Image (tube, rainbow, N blue to C red; front, side, top):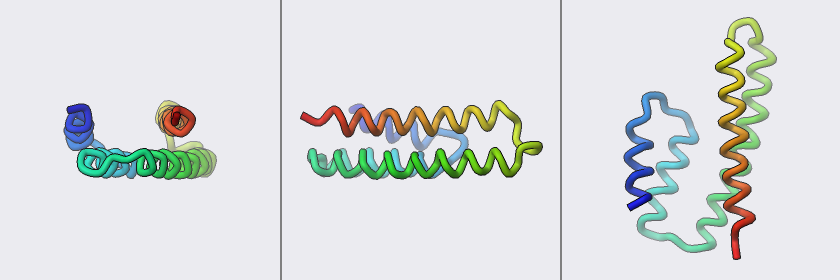
Length: 95
């Protein structure tokens, strides 16, 4: 039920980013084939992807300092750190 809600929420978002695609793929795969190893693999992949997003967004903010509003830059970095934190929680929560 929760994965269906995540899937519906991912489809209803107005702007699409690559993390939306990751959430959508994770939800669809977890509905049918959830295992602990697969969850660990998705959490590891998410941690690597969001670390890359932090580096990309930081360089984008520095390169286009006058063109990007500070609120947009701060929000994108906040979401990157938030998603990285969630991925690390999933990795460390394994029993």
